[in-house]
Length: 300
Image 1 (cartoon, rainbow, N blue to C red):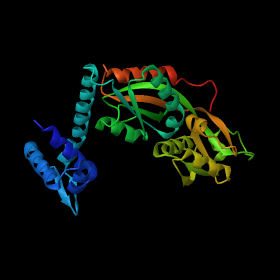
Image 2 (image 1 turned 90 degrees about the vertical axis):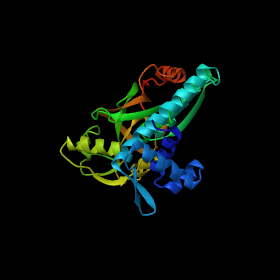
Image 3 (image 1 turned 30 degrees about the vertical axis):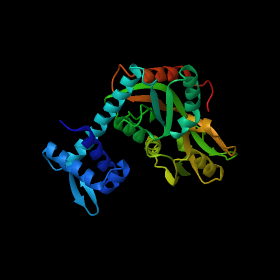
Image 4 (image 1 turned 180 degrees about the horizontal axis):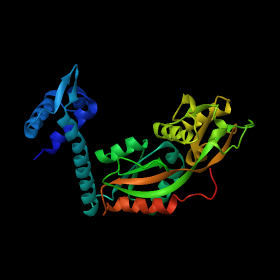
């Protein structure tokens, strides 16, 4: 049997990279953290860390336990919240992690509707790209994550999760307003010889794949996750880009033109760690999401 406190200490060591940093994060004395680590290694029966300069490096067993510890602790915290709500000690809480363009478009309407329907349930919001949001779910630091994946790229890392599809958002080619092109504006091949502005890792991978299907590799001149900056670069004539509908709904630069790419889209999901039945506050939140975050008639 593993002690919960020792698991929390070890999870902090794994996140922070050293005993000293973990002690500071937990507000523990350093000898206490070292003691918990030694006891946990004795319980595990194998070394969990190796010294690496001023910090530590997890052993293979340590990495395995660190991943499981985050999941176990998240489940424990969720169970306490659910039991407290069931016992009438609290009305419940929902912590949402969402990527930037969702926070700027979907989330305000969802949050307002949820607050109006369930004023006694606390809703906390944080910004996180899909990989970080899913990790926060497993660590018990978030209850719901808004994530996305491109239609031609099956999502990974969501085993053991409950997934609710929210919407499909189209993808657009973004070019400088007033520019002329030798071919159809909705065909990526028209921009074969242009410089490109790429976004996040998943969007960049999708761009490379989409251009590769048309027989060329885009010359990426700039990389930014900021959809406002990407459009400003396009408006300045420094390249072309592709952006999803939510980003363009959040901000549309007057100096760009957008043309929808046929058959290209991103899938936006609400993800919860674990299987149904879900805690009542989360079920209530997902119901509001499905009622509120509907696909608009016009994009962006």
